[in-house]
Image 1: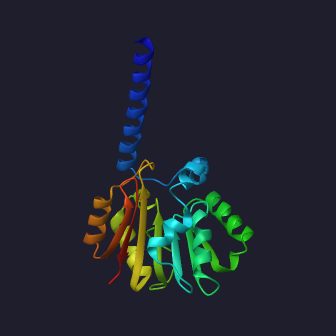
Image 2 (image 1 turned 45 degrees about the vertical axis):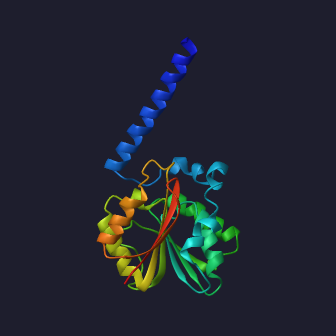
Image 3 (image 1 turned 60 degrees about the horizontal axis):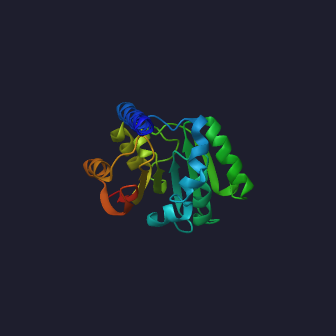
Length: 210
């Protein structure tokens, strides 16, 4: 019984810590810490976060201009650059300079630097022209941005009429937002629902700018 009690206590401590972490993140959303960036490409994460499969529901194709908001280490930026082809363009935006350097090196090593521009910026004032983006993609990023209203207004500004927003969230992220909450925020901001794929553990939403 002593071992069982110890195990139960340990599980309780871990569960309590996880609940506390998630509650704190919900109160104060923040970017994923740079020192934990290795988690973004951990083999366990890549089992459900294959870049090409993750991007599939968003319909990237040759010639599109794509915004990768919260690009991090460039894991998805590289895949986006491959999908838009030589006539397309990707804007990788992150607030953390060290992550941008990693992303820039990744894209250069893949021979895709000519298709990608990186910007160190927050989400409320993007260094992009009005109506210049075909699709804005946020992978495990929407829940990291404190003011979703300001975020969505800025995305509306940079998106072309009929442009798309792709949002994908995953439960292991401490700031994880369930799909109904995100859908409600997009609806209130005036974006048109385009569909949902995945499951509560990891889902993707597609929305359109009118």
